[in-house]
Structures are given as structure tokens and as C-alpha cells.
Length: 311
Image (tube, rainbow, N blue to C red; front, side):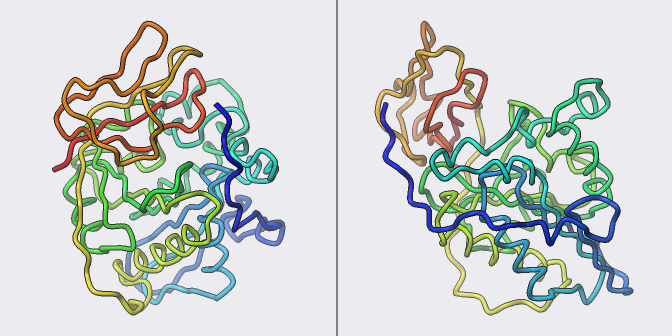
């Protein structure tokens, strides 16, 4: 299926000036207040073409944001993939080999396999482990409203609801992502009895200025929530909507196809056909089954669509 060229309002910038941080790990910057308080990690570019996180992270660094309590760490994760960006093929710089947001299990990090993403995850492992609270900034391949994604632990829900926006939609994962271990479930952050908040914010379509604005606002609101900076002015609270992840469907064959064009947030009745995948069918698991992040270009072995139910 032919895809229309995407709007490219925000493009990559040279990040070489940010390579040498102060932690001994490339593209990782840490600022200590000297006062007691939490250690908060703002992580950008887990996927190389999700440019909004770069905008947010460089904003924090360029404007001299510093914590009044605790410690602030700012990291650019997959710069190697980011640097492969080609505006003629803007979606292809998501990763070089592995999806950096699926390889955070101890088994994979302790394993013998090598790739740019595995090497980078191993380098970032102590950065992630040291953080009390984590915001991992992402964006979507379709132009949809922003939303939170997080393990369905009360500590995560409480923080996301308290922060309140710009994202007002919440995707809760009761049993993990279903296609690997994401960064926000590494170590203690993936444990029900663990401590600390770990959230993903999906800011909207990759290359829109609005996604960059959401990323920056969310990073500032996240820091303010934990007391590291003063709270910026806030709009009136908006209603919050919550969804529970039921199943992550993978592309199994080259014949995968949705029954109709999808962007995300479409609903289906129980049993309604959503997609075919060779001899397989993907059907709605409940009434008001809501799809999140339908793939724009099916690739065997990658996620096709996330099936959810409203809470």
C-alpha cells in the first residue's frame, strides 16, 4: 500500500555537542542539587526517529534546568539510530538491529549476543538502575493524541494521574508489554513491590512540532511533580481516560493486512475482525475493543497492533 509522505515539521539536529556528558557514558548528563531528594531520569531517543524526546532533552540542557532537590539525569539513548535518519525514509531510523525498548530483561542484557542496541542498553544499564523515577519519551507513527503507557502498578497510575497532562489518555499494562521487556520495566521498576515511578509518554506523531511541545511540557511537569523544579503554569485539568492492554499482536506473515485503514483509538465489537495475517485472524476481544498503535507498515516479527479495553 502506498503511503503519503509524512509531514516533517521537526527534523534531527547535530547532537555532537552533547556527546561528552559528565558520567563517563556518552550522551548522559547528570546534575546533583546537593539536597536530599529523588533521582529522576529523563530519557530521549530510545527509538532513533522519535525526535520529540531530543527536543525535550536539549531544551532541558540548553535552558540550564537544574534540580533544586535530588538529582536530574538526562540521556539520549539510541543516538546511533538517530544519526541514520534520512528524510526520504524517515521511519527507518527507529533502530539499527534490535528494538532498544524490548531488550531490558536480565537474560538479554547478560547474554552474549551483540548489536548496537544491546551494547547501548548495557552501557545505560547503570543509568536506568540508579534512577528512582523514569520518564521515557516516545512518539507514534500515526497522528493521534498523546498518551501515557506504564505497568499497572498503583504508584505509576497515581503519578500519571497527578501529573495530568498534556497526555490525558492512559494505557495500563497489567502483565507487561507482551513483546519484550521495555526500559521502564527494567529491574526494580518492573516489580509490583518495587519502588519508584516509570512512565512512557507517547507524544503524538514523530515529526510534528506539537509532539515536541508535548514532550517538553511533559518533561517539565514530570520534574515538577517530584519537586525538582517549580511547577510551570498549568491549564485547567482535563478528563482522564484509561485503557487496559489485553493483547499485543505481532505480524506473523507477509500477508498481514488490516480490514480497514487504522490510525489508533478505533473501536471494535467483540469478535469483529480487525486484521488478517496469512491463515490467522485478529479479532476484537471484547466490546469497545480499542486499538492502539496500529502499524503503518507491517514487518514480520514486529508489533502489529495493541488490543485494549476501556476502564
